[in-house]
Amino acid sequence: MDALPPASAQPSSDPPAYTYAPSDIYPVGERERELCGKADHPDWLYLGGLLVLDVAGVFANAQLTATDGNARPYVSSSAVRQLGPAAIGLSWGATIGGGYLALPKCEPHWVSYAPREGEVRSPWPLALTLAMVGGMFGASMTGVFTTLQTSSVDQRTWSTEERAARLWIGGATGFIGALLPYVIPPRTWSAARELARIRATADAHGVGVAYSIAF
Image (cartoon, rainbow, N blue to C red; front, side):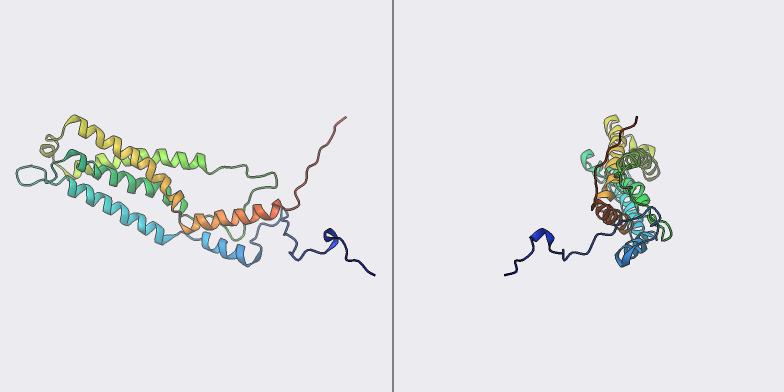
């Protein structure tokens, strides 16, 4: 009576994983071509949304710092007025970080991916650099639009602490805003990261350990 072969000897139903060669610089398969196509062009919708956010931040700051004919602010609370620099910093910081992520991240004739040794580059150094630039930009834009949207007479009604806090808040929210696009990324960045994940997962199959001895 014939016996069934051991389970380990039975053929697997899963297709063998694709192993990328160093010359595989083109998208492989329909899924990779689709992802590279999404990452090949700027995400104009995302960039347009950032522009609308910038305008909304400037408008919010103008409304919160508005005064009547006697230079008396409509918003008497200094804490509420600080929402203006927060809106400017957050929106312009997001433009710095999101503007980079929304740019093309894949080339149909050259698809880069991590080598078999593993990912050698991390996105966080650049993200933190853009965040620092976003912080400086947020503080600068807060000062620029505060000067343009208010007169020297209006600003004299503010305390020194409030004027200093506007710059600090604009810088801090600019730093945070530049990191927000990594949480809500554009389709270019999402597609590029998914493409890198697919290639890294495929190359993970069949990984071995070797050693050598030199005499």
